[in-house]
Amino acid sequence: MSAPAIDTAAWASPWRQYSPGDKVLLSLGLVISALVLPPWPASALVTAAALGLMLGPGRVPVHLLVRAASGPAAFIVLGTLSIAITWRSEGFGPTVTSETLAAAASTLAHAVAGTCAVLLLAATTPMTDLLSWARRRGVPEAVVDVAGLIYRLLFVLLESVSAVRAAQTARLGYTSRRAALRSASTLAAATLTRAFERARRLESGLAGRGFEGVMRTVGQQQTSSIWFVGGTLAGLVTLVAVSLGVAQ
Image (cartoon, rainbow, N blue to C red; front, side, top):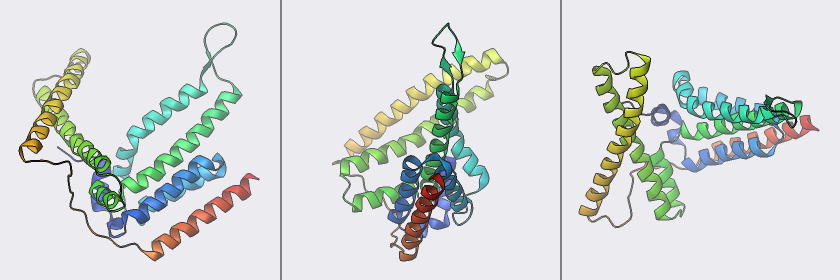
């Protein structure tokens, strides 16, 4: 079973030396800028900054970035199409107007910029580091533990998908279109069943070991960098100033 692309990039990132809080500040600042500021040129600047940091100092491989962004990209495209295409007030059938196109373009710009800003954090910070940082910052234990369990169960789900698909492929389950559709439906059902069973066994194992509601994770200790924070704040201020200046 291969790890998710975004997880692989995070563990290999040279930015692991920086505090998760510093990277949260950077990512959150870019997300807020992408959502609040006018789509042009703010969204373009946020997208360029996030991609430049990931591919440059973050050293995220292009193929891993493409794999990680493929899922969000599909949702963005579907959402944009649903905004661009509307139903005629007279008659029946879909149509596209200048208003819907403008709204779709604005939504697309905000969504792409916000997604790139979030991927910047996800591609440079492993989940264990984020969980440890959140616990140290006073986030309730229940919230941290739920996030940690969901993270672990994602790997259980991926392992189940990999095992079932390998068995189906060995039995020629994808040799034709009809066989592929049948195998896909069986894959979904078997994956959910196996994942639920593994989750139940995980719960039973924790209960048998006297689990009391706190799941500690071993995270790498990093100290905040004044240079990183200073550069982040300076970059965000410049981005806001340029965006507002061009938009006026």
